[in-house]
Amino acid sequence: MTQTATDPLVIGTRTYKSRLLLGTGGFPRLEALAEAIGASGTELVTVALRRIDPAQRGSLVDVLDAAGVELLPNTAGCFTARDAVLTAKLAREAFGTDLVKLEVIGDERTLLPDAVELLAAAEELVAAGFVVLPYTTDDPVLAKRLEDVGCAAVMPLGSPIGSGMGIRNPYNIGLIVEQAKVPVVLDAGVGTASDAALAMELGCDAVLCASAISRAQDPTAMALAIRAGVEGGRLARGAGRIPRRLYAEASTPDAGLPSFG
Amino acid sequence: MIAVNGHPNGLVQPGSTVRAMLDVLGLDEAARGVAVAVDAEVVPRAEWSTFLLADDAHVEVLTAVQGG
Image 1 (spheres, rainbow over the protein chains, first blue to last red):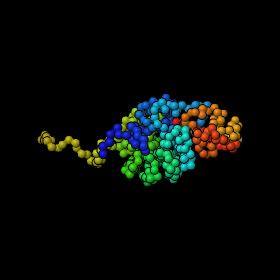
Image 2 (image 1 turned 135 degrees about the vertical axis):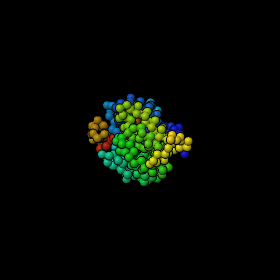
Image 3 (image 1 turned 90 degrees about the vertical axis):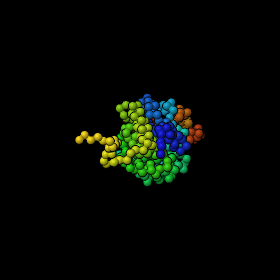
Image 4 (image 1 turned 30 degrees about the vertical axis):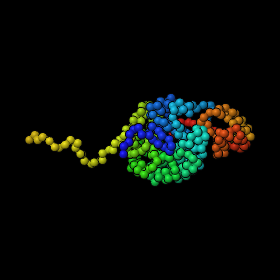
């Protein structure tokens, strides 16, 4: 298996050079978001839908259009399949895209997905012609079920949204990667560049990152760092790491070792 | 009374179109990134000039915000 940093990410019929998806939440200013987009090299960024405020003309879409990135609308804040499906359909109208990051949350404190509602919503949206990227738990069985109903990718969490706790169960992420025939995007939990690198070393096809960049002290610098982490992890995965050993294995030969009496 | 984004709005007359409602609200109907739901159903942009609002319509007008 040879992987390079340049082979494209393929989601459905779309291809991307970048393997870093950027969440737009949490940036204090649109200028900071635009800078981070540039530094991250991302081609696909999330947006949410909320009630319009007539007083505040949002220029978010203009900023994202100017950055030349594709929009990935999410269904953040939805707790039922019904609300998530309606939100996805509204996003399709608003943005003219069939892509959707499907989130159906089951618990306000942890923002963990509701597996039952998520699967129901995914099935309905696939039938309605959407390219569905579900935010899911790190459960390999659920990931498989989501793939089976026609999702174009699966996006397991490393740890809860915004927690920065990294990948709490790398074995499960590895199992999801091993069985998946669609791209696996590590979504949620990344806190810093090494978390993104680990995701890629585990075989994920991409990383979706929001808070780790947007809430960093220097979002632009962190965007660069996480981009490098994704690229490094991808290269390392392709390079094939050495097996872990409990004891040392000398890299210097014993042969020719002098004896000093 | 028609409710817009959770608030009764006496300025939006029953029987008016979605497009007329957007005008009353001072929203640019050509703006990208705007979507309208009436009574939990999407109203496609192509129907904005013909879709009539009932006097008890529950309207949601949504747009893009940062998130996710």
